[in-house]
Image (cartoon, rainbow, N blue to C red):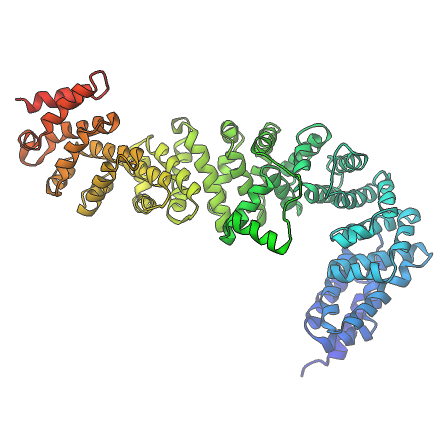
Amino acid sequence: GEVPAELVLDALVKGLTGEDDALRRIAVEGTVRVCTDNTNRSRAFVENKGMDALMSLIARDFNRNEPMQQVSVVLGQVLPSLKDDDMIKNHAVQFCKPLIESENVHDQIKGVAGLNAIFFANKDLGEALVKEENLLDPLLKIARYGSERAQTLTAEVFSHVANSEDGRNMLAGDATDILKLLATADAGTVRSAAAVTLAKLNAIDFNAESENGMLVLSSVTSLLSVKASKEEHAKGVEAVSFVITDSQVKMMFIKGQGLEVLRELIKLARENAKEVYGYGLSFVFENLTMSEDDKRREKLREMEVTEEQWEQFEKLTKSQTRKSGQRDPRENVDMRIKVFVEVEGISALRALVLNSTSERVWEAASRTLCNIASVQSVRPQMIAQGALRALFKLTTAGSDKCKKFAAHALAKIFVTTDPHVLKDEQLMDTIGPLVRQVRNCDEDLVVFECCMALTNIATVSYEAKQKMVNAKAIGAFEYAQYSDTMMVRRAATQAINNLIPTDEVIAWFCKPDKLKLWLLFSSAIEDDQPTACAGTGAMANLAADERFAEALSKQENGLSTIVELANSDDLDIAHRAVVCLLQLTDTWPEGNGPEVLKEAKALEACKAVLNKFPDSAAVPAAQECVEILSK
């Protein structure tokens, strides 16, 4: 039959207090499973001296964090399951308060470690204990006079407290002065915990040139150094991530001591990308390479709210999401990006992407690479430092947002990069992700730049065009042609044009409805000259193929539209139309192109081009066409 719960709990308590390390781990896991969401068992665990058993885990080894973490895991399930706020608080108070107020060094360590475990399990409960149980004074005493381990744990408690505005207010005054002393302590663990807390306390009005600012940056630089431990590295990254959203702080990281911190962060990412602080590093790099206004606009776009609507909401609710007086103009963002690239930040992002398995890291890194690619001058350095390999991985890994940022970064790079200098496999690997964004993304800028990049790549080879066709680019570009944004329509039209002469595109153009639409695009000169130019250019390219000529011959007003375009006062349009007419003299069905074109008054149109544009590039085609039609 089933083992009674009392016996199970008794066995677990004995396991927690036993001598066997493996058995204690099993008891921790067992307690979590037995007590989770079960009020009766959780209360029975507490009544059966379970809290004393948990404290014995901490007491067994003062100098390691693992026992404290094990206790926090158990408390995180047991305390909420008690379902009684007063009972929860009473047990939490009894768990740590007497020990914290003790004069015994070992008791102090156990008490502060227990309080840390409570913070990890329930931050609101931890803060309430410090505030309502008057624990701040004994904690300050331990921070000033306690042992090294006690000081470290106390500084970590203060770090938890500093996560809220009420907590930061609580630590103003004596606590801040003591933390400054701890930040210069000989022990690295004490320094690191104090530095993180100081960073949080100064995050609102951080000034790198102030006494507090220099102290924090100096401490952080020390924490990020090669000689520091992994725990110190993690603390250093945490400290930076807490202040990096401030616009003024961002500028501090590209000069002086702030730049040294940035170098250490980049080195850390390159060499330790798999560590748990990988997300913290990617978060820092992401924020450094963009403005808070950029983040705000993106968030509003995701919420489908306009800037005006949000500002009205802020007025109505008397709230404000931006600090007064904070500005972060585009030139500042560009300056930070250039410095980041100069100190080999791309290699750090590459390491984070290739070595991490965290989707959060991938998404932050993809966004950072997209931020960087927005600065045209650094795109060659991005390629040189290995950004493409990282971006190719990100287009197939992680969230849809991650894939979008990665593809958009590739698009930005390939819009301005000569595709002929890159390897064929790099070009081919870029095509699929970009086509997918054209087809699926609802952001005009992303679609526009992907179309432009694909247009550039298509100039390299027939194989590149065919790869796009196989990736269903024709349908994607056609859909983009119906965009409400003129620039997107232009880019999509040009992109389809560049897929000529693949058989699939020619067959697509020969469909009556498609051909009719392109004739309309070509005729809309006053509304959108660049799109009309691209449409007429497509006709010129297609006219050399007999299949297109036959389709045009069957299209109502097809040939007359081309002749009308040749009569245009716009040189670019007229030139392309004349080239189209010249090709049709040879490819028109049944070999009677010249007769049909003369009847459509193509001869007069070509002579008009010679008269209107006598010194233009259109002259050779117009002259040849006149000679053929004059015979």
